[in-house]
Length: 412
Image 1 (cartoon, rainbow, N blue to C red):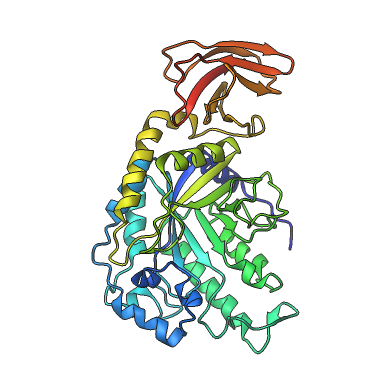
Image 2: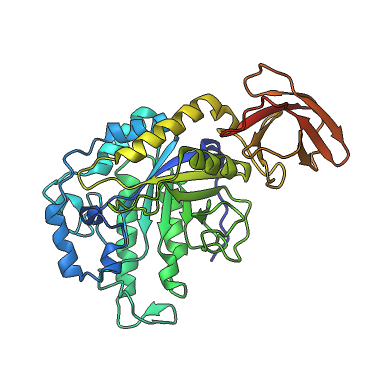
């Protein structure tokens, strides 16, 4: 691919994206009708001709863009990334490229992304679009066909590329400013010629400040502005998708679920606790990354109550401690058994996520000169000792680490 030189506006948007630190991921489509996750068509081997009957049952009368945005905003989320088209081929927006969409194909007959875009703009929330490269239904994708010299055999691959360009043009011209185009599905065809040089150039030409993320589980390629980590923190591979992937200098983002599934799943009860989610957010920021936390709305358009209640509790934490997350940068030190550190200007926020056995917290290889140390709320000063090997903090027995004990260090 030709050399990609980001514009000044693009670079500024990257910094703004990093400042946000926390976003809401929304997986929503006709698959929600079956209540078995977003991969139900593939996993249950439902033929496309049968699966598309779901459009007749998809009528989300309880969808309320204002309510969704308020849930995100109250949680402390600064952006929303929503699925415009998932692997099942169904488009959740008004598109001229295919009749298989929510406006033309369902009794609902309206474009929820239009309403969401208007509400996000009103409330100062950045709107991003997820877009699937993989398609289980379209003939010109040729799902399952062998790839020869970059192209699926006996398939009009160029037609599919044109289709994607048409839809991306619609998404970038009909919904106001879009913060990120978030691709997924590359991993289905690692050897295919995805025409990224054309697709990425199209995006950057239509909207120079729109960032590009691609969840391909590989090193970033020219034209991409964000590096993603699925179900993982940057530099880890607990989710199994990041083997051999090194952390780049691009803005970083971890995406994660609040339970197990991305799309609505009636049987999914593996709900993460408020504490787990706050720790994920803090650990992501400490590694200089964002957290994109997913909800899968129900087929009626509501976000299920379990998610709403937990996000409300997360919001109580971000309202009080968000100063240590928003606008911060990470990688001050390597992750420690006790937690991590975020930095903003001349302030270091020491996040103690796990109490230590010792009466002190040791921060290795911290060379900045510390002027003062205090509890986050400023009610008590904290003793410290700075030596060549690092810093010893002595927070005392009353220091609360139930969720996240935060110590503010002012540095020179």
